[in-house]
Image (spheres, rainbow, N blue to C red):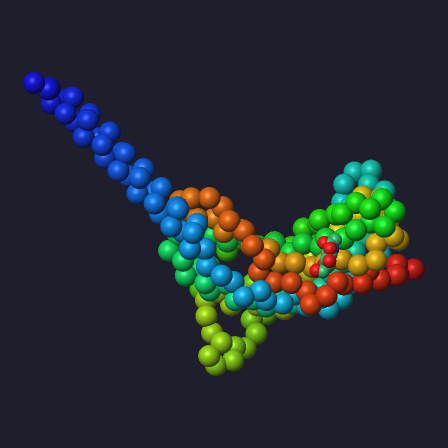
Length: 200
Ligand SMILES: *[C@@H]1O[C@H](CO)[C@@H](O)[C@H](O)[C@H]1NC(C)=O
Protein backbone atom coordinates (compact mmCIF):
# COMPACT_ATOMS: atom_id res chain seq x y z
CA UNK A 1 0.00 0.00 0.00
CA UNK A 2 1.27 3.44 -0.89
CA UNK A 3 0.78 6.31 1.48
CA UNK A 4 -1.17 9.34 0.29
CA UNK A 5 2.00 11.37 0.24
CA UNK A 6 3.74 8.87 -2.02
CA UNK A 7 0.81 8.88 -4.43
CA UNK A 8 0.77 12.66 -4.52
CA UNK A 9 4.48 12.73 -5.15
CA UNK A 10 4.17 10.28 -8.02
CA UNK A 11 1.29 12.22 -9.55
CA UNK A 12 3.08 15.54 -9.43
CA UNK A 13 6.24 14.15 -10.97
CA UNK A 14 4.14 12.66 -13.75
CA UNK A 15 2.48 16.03 -14.32
CA UNK A 16 5.88 17.74 -14.48
CA UNK A 17 7.04 15.23 -17.06
CA UNK A 18 3.98 15.88 -19.23
CA UNK A 19 4.47 19.63 -19.04
CA UNK A 20 8.12 19.25 -20.01
CA UNK A 21 7.17 17.10 -22.99
CA UNK A 22 4.55 19.63 -24.07
CA UNK A 23 7.03 22.54 -23.84
CA UNK A 24 9.54 20.50 -25.80
CA UNK A 25 6.98 19.89 -28.55
CA UNK A 26 6.03 23.57 -28.71
CA UNK A 27 9.64 24.63 -29.00
CA UNK A 28 10.36 22.00 -31.68
CA UNK A 29 7.25 22.96 -33.64
CA UNK A 30 8.00 26.68 -33.63
CA UNK A 31 11.63 26.08 -34.49
CA UNK A 32 10.68 23.96 -37.50
CA UNK A 33 7.92 26.33 -38.59
CA UNK A 34 9.95 29.54 -38.36
CA UNK A 35 8.00 32.16 -40.33
CA UNK A 36 9.58 33.50 -43.50
CA UNK A 37 10.27 37.22 -43.71
CA UNK A 38 10.40 39.23 -46.91
CA UNK A 39 13.64 41.17 -46.67
CA UNK A 40 12.85 44.88 -46.52
CA UNK A 41 14.89 47.95 -47.36
CA UNK A 42 17.43 50.06 -45.51
CA UNK A 43 17.80 53.46 -47.12
CA UNK A 44 20.94 55.32 -46.06
CA UNK A 45 20.20 58.99 -46.62
CA UNK A 46 23.19 60.64 -45.10
CA UNK A 47 26.60 59.43 -44.04
CA UNK A 48 29.08 61.96 -42.71
CA UNK A 49 32.54 61.66 -41.24
CA UNK A 50 33.59 64.22 -38.72
CA UNK A 51 36.18 64.61 -35.99
CA UNK A 52 34.97 64.10 -32.46
CA UNK A 53 35.48 62.33 -29.18
CA UNK A 54 33.56 59.60 -27.45
CA UNK A 55 31.94 60.77 -24.23
CA UNK A 56 34.42 59.06 -22.06
CA UNK A 57 37.09 60.50 -19.84
CA UNK A 58 40.42 60.87 -21.65
CA UNK A 59 38.96 59.97 -25.04
CA UNK A 60 41.11 61.19 -27.91
CA UNK A 61 39.86 63.02 -30.98
CA UNK A 62 39.12 60.59 -33.76
CA UNK A 63 36.94 60.15 -36.82
CA UNK A 64 33.31 59.39 -36.12
CA UNK A 65 30.61 58.54 -38.63
CA UNK A 66 27.00 59.60 -38.33
CA UNK A 67 24.23 58.06 -40.35
CA UNK A 68 20.65 58.92 -41.22
CA UNK A 69 18.45 56.16 -42.53
CA UNK A 70 14.95 55.00 -43.37
CA UNK A 71 13.81 51.47 -42.65
CA UNK A 72 10.95 49.61 -44.21
CA UNK A 73 10.09 46.02 -43.56
CA UNK A 74 7.14 43.80 -42.80
CA UNK A 75 7.58 41.62 -39.73
CA UNK A 76 3.95 40.55 -39.42
CA UNK A 77 4.78 36.89 -40.06
CA UNK A 78 7.05 36.89 -36.99
CA UNK A 79 4.67 38.80 -34.75
CA UNK A 80 1.69 36.69 -35.67
CA UNK A 81 3.41 33.55 -34.45
CA UNK A 82 1.90 32.40 -31.13
CA UNK A 83 5.32 31.68 -29.65
CA UNK A 84 6.84 35.15 -30.19
CA UNK A 85 7.54 36.96 -26.95
CA UNK A 86 9.60 39.81 -28.28
CA UNK A 87 11.73 40.88 -31.21
CA UNK A 88 15.09 42.56 -31.01
CA UNK A 89 15.93 44.61 -34.09
CA UNK A 90 19.37 45.99 -34.76
CA UNK A 91 21.01 47.81 -37.63
CA UNK A 92 24.60 46.91 -38.26
CA UNK A 93 27.34 48.16 -40.54
CA UNK A 94 29.91 45.60 -41.63
CA UNK A 95 33.02 46.63 -43.46
CA UNK A 96 36.54 45.55 -44.27
CA UNK A 97 39.55 47.60 -43.28
CA UNK A 98 41.90 47.48 -46.27
CA UNK A 99 45.19 47.78 -44.40
CA UNK A 100 44.59 44.92 -41.98
CA UNK A 101 41.95 42.93 -43.83
CA UNK A 102 39.85 42.74 -40.66
CA UNK A 103 36.09 42.70 -40.94
CA UNK A 104 34.27 44.89 -38.45
CA UNK A 105 30.64 44.62 -37.42
CA UNK A 106 29.20 47.64 -35.67
CA UNK A 107 25.73 48.02 -34.21
CA UNK A 108 24.40 51.49 -34.97
CA UNK A 109 20.80 51.36 -33.79
CA UNK A 110 18.50 48.92 -32.07
CA UNK A 111 15.01 48.53 -30.75
CA UNK A 112 13.11 45.95 -28.73
CA UNK A 113 9.56 45.21 -29.75
CA UNK A 114 7.48 43.49 -27.09
CA UNK A 115 4.41 41.53 -27.89
CA UNK A 116 2.46 43.95 -25.71
CA UNK A 117 3.36 47.00 -27.80
CA UNK A 118 2.51 45.45 -31.12
CA UNK A 119 0.02 48.20 -31.73
CA UNK A 120 2.64 50.91 -31.43
CA UNK A 121 5.22 49.50 -33.75
CA UNK A 122 4.51 51.91 -36.54
CA UNK A 123 5.50 54.75 -34.25
CA UNK A 124 9.14 53.74 -34.05
CA UNK A 125 10.39 56.62 -36.22
CA UNK A 126 10.37 60.31 -35.45
CA UNK A 127 7.02 60.71 -37.12
CA UNK A 128 4.35 58.26 -38.10
CA UNK A 129 4.04 58.22 -41.86
CA UNK A 130 0.69 57.91 -43.59
CA UNK A 131 -0.27 54.41 -44.58
CA UNK A 132 -1.54 53.43 -47.93
CA UNK A 133 -4.78 51.49 -47.91
CA UNK A 134 -4.19 47.76 -47.86
CA UNK A 135 -0.69 48.19 -46.48
CA UNK A 136 -1.70 48.34 -42.85
CA UNK A 137 -0.57 45.81 -40.33
CA UNK A 138 0.82 45.70 -36.87
CA UNK A 139 4.25 44.51 -37.89
CA UNK A 140 4.94 47.03 -40.63
CA UNK A 141 8.15 48.61 -39.47
CA UNK A 142 8.59 52.18 -40.68
CA UNK A 143 11.46 54.30 -39.47
CA UNK A 144 11.91 57.66 -41.15
CA UNK A 145 15.02 59.75 -40.64
CA UNK A 146 16.43 57.40 -38.01
CA UNK A 147 19.84 58.31 -36.62
CA UNK A 148 22.59 56.14 -35.25
CA UNK A 149 21.95 55.60 -31.57
CA UNK A 150 25.49 54.42 -30.88
CA UNK A 151 28.71 56.15 -31.91
CA UNK A 152 30.27 54.66 -35.01
CA UNK A 153 34.03 54.68 -34.69
CA UNK A 154 36.75 52.57 -36.18
CA UNK A 155 39.26 50.93 -33.80
CA UNK A 156 42.15 52.56 -35.67
CA UNK A 157 40.59 56.00 -35.16
CA UNK A 158 40.20 56.70 -38.87
CA UNK A 159 38.08 55.49 -41.76
CA UNK A 160 40.84 56.32 -44.25
CA UNK A 161 41.21 52.78 -45.52
CA UNK A 162 37.56 51.77 -45.43
CA UNK A 163 35.89 51.92 -48.81
CA UNK A 164 32.32 50.90 -48.15
CA UNK A 165 30.03 49.26 -45.60
CA UNK A 166 27.10 46.88 -45.85
CA UNK A 167 24.07 47.99 -43.86
CA UNK A 168 21.79 45.26 -42.57
CA UNK A 169 18.80 45.23 -40.24
CA UNK A 170 18.83 41.98 -38.25
CA UNK A 171 16.16 40.50 -36.02
CA UNK A 172 16.37 38.13 -33.09
CA UNK A 173 13.18 36.42 -32.13
CA UNK A 174 12.81 35.56 -28.45
CA UNK A 175 10.15 32.91 -28.04
CA UNK A 176 8.14 32.05 -24.91
CA UNK A 177 9.64 28.57 -25.03
CA UNK A 178 12.48 27.27 -27.14
CA UNK A 179 15.62 28.67 -28.65
CA UNK A 180 16.39 32.16 -29.90
CA UNK A 181 16.37 32.44 -33.67
CA UNK A 182 17.54 35.25 -35.86
CA UNK A 183 17.55 36.45 -39.42
CA UNK A 184 17.70 39.43 -41.72
CA UNK A 185 14.83 41.91 -41.73
CA UNK A 186 16.14 44.45 -44.27
CA UNK A 187 19.23 45.28 -46.30
CA UNK A 188 20.58 48.30 -48.13
CA UNK A 189 20.35 47.79 -51.91
CA UNK A 190 24.12 47.95 -52.23
CA UNK A 191 27.28 48.80 -50.33
CA UNK A 192 27.32 52.30 -48.89
CA UNK A 193 30.40 54.34 -49.80
CA UNK A 194 32.31 55.84 -46.90
CA UNK A 195 32.74 59.54 -47.71
CA UNK A 196 35.66 61.90 -47.24
CA UNK A 197 36.22 63.48 -43.87
CA UNK A 198 34.61 66.89 -43.44
CA UNK A 199 37.36 69.42 -42.75
CA UNK A 200 36.57 72.30 -40.46
C1 LIG B 1 29.02 43.12 -48.40
O1 LIG B 1 28.06 42.59 -49.29
C2 LIG B 1 28.62 42.00 -50.45
C3 LIG B 1 27.50 41.61 -51.37
O2 LIG B 1 26.47 40.98 -50.69
C4 LIG B 1 29.49 40.82 -50.03
O3 LIG B 1 30.08 40.22 -51.15
C5 LIG B 1 30.57 41.31 -49.08
O4 LIG B 1 31.33 40.22 -48.60
C6 LIG B 1 29.96 42.05 -47.91
N1 LIG B 1 31.03 42.64 -47.12
C7 LIG B 1 31.08 42.54 -45.80
C8 LIG B 1 32.23 43.19 -45.14
O5 LIG B 1 30.25 41.95 -45.15
